[in-house]
Amino acid sequence: MLVKIIKKDEEQINISDLIDQVKKSPYIDESGAIFSFEGIVRGKEKDLEVKKLILSAPNITETQKGLESIVREVKDKYSVKEIAVVHYLGEFYIGDPLFLVVVAGAHRHETLDALKEVIERTKFDLDFQKDEESNKGTNIIMSGG
Picture 1 (spheres, rainbow, N blue to C red):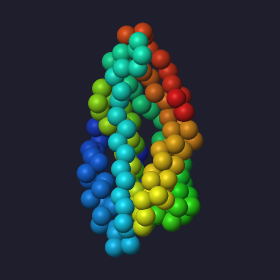
Picture 2: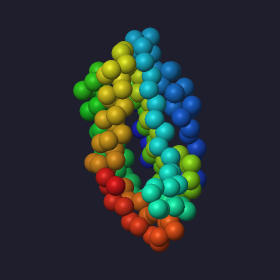
Picture 3: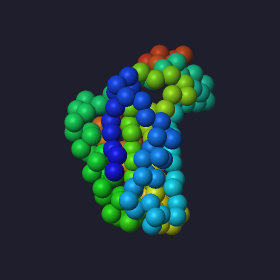
Picture 4: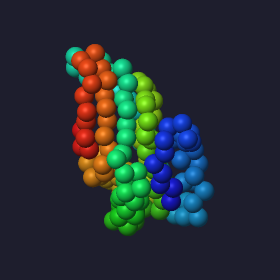
């Protein structure tokens, strides 16, 4: 299980790296599905044009523990074989990856459900802050936004 919150310039892990990591699991022979998600910076939304996004967490250690807890709970709930997650912090531009998740499981239904739950719980349950700089100024978005 790989679960990391990383400052953007400290280490670079991409979605292919996470898929490779999951495929090295000793339980991959029990898996029939792998789903992945790559959350990126969106550049436009209605009349808003994003220039950059600054993503932070007030207490990285606590946020890391929370992310690990979410992954353990989801893994047990859906009986999936492996989950790998990377969430980046720092300054990002349109198209930059922010959040990567890969889940391997025996069957597609529970594997996809596990992926969805990791994504939603990370967004709503953890203490991240986004400072979004756009053509309309700076907007601060707290968890869940």
